[in-house]
Length: 440
Image (cartoon, rainbow, N blue to C red; front, side, top):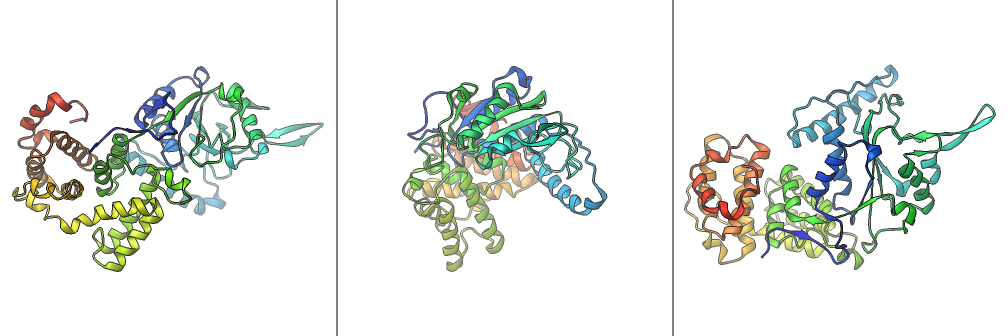
């Protein structure tokens, strides 16, 4: 059973493919250059695979300010104050998630350095602007979504000198809208408007063959981009899931299936609105958190709650995939107490493995959850017992389990794996096979 690797559907081209990690690294490098010296990239990928999120994360890393002053009109102070508070909470979570030591004050949303424009929803006048008469001539009024540093908007925000104009759903936009965007991409201007010197342009959209509305991109426009195809990577998704604190059952399930159910457009082609994508698995995580908050355990002990949770998961990823995932969750009923491993070190993995490999992965998710909620000396003692447990497994599986667990603990605590009794011996034993592939 594979536990890692890229996931390339039949429609995926075999050229210019980048994993999420590679795409982020490329954009990070691109955003450090002068926008007028680079070629804008166009990112191709099916719905729900994280195109806009990757661009957003790269923009946050390069352009999110430490402090932004926002003038608050007295008449709108209360309303704006709520918006500011909400935006600060969102940004603090982003900062915390990336472990960046920054202080963010009075910033209303990300719009001052990251403009997310859905061209599919635009009319040609939305991009070009609307003509108004001034004196004896007509001038074009600039749309509000185009960056304009120094201009104070009605909500009190002011665009920064540097940022990203993200033109999403480019291939889905009407041909006239694509044509209007052509001049903005080619000459960094449209009509009287000129894109600020510090702002980058990035476009994205769905390719043919994934059930999306797609219009043929004019060849002059297509020839103005660097075209990149986003390839799903199980390892990259697992790393993101850990950083985003998704429920441990999700990464463990996808490890156990080799990423087979991470994305599948086939169910949509068969007429089903719910199908698995990285986005819809995030929706599943929200369902798990909601039910765990209400019923304390996943799956809930009550039959009616179990049925309700399964139906909710079906609404996210479809019935077939939901059935397999819910079966994975129900392995918990067959599992021993995780503390038999972590506190008493009396469990042999072969006692679980002889039944089903999926059961072993489900048990691993429970071990990881207990470790994530442990602290101090208890955490290090339990991790040492966890290490003894996985050391009895297939080496590749053990390495993946240890690596993912270290990432989880580092994302939540100041965990130092070098302090774990027995880890140095274990690492030396497997070093020639796996290191360095995660940060110790």
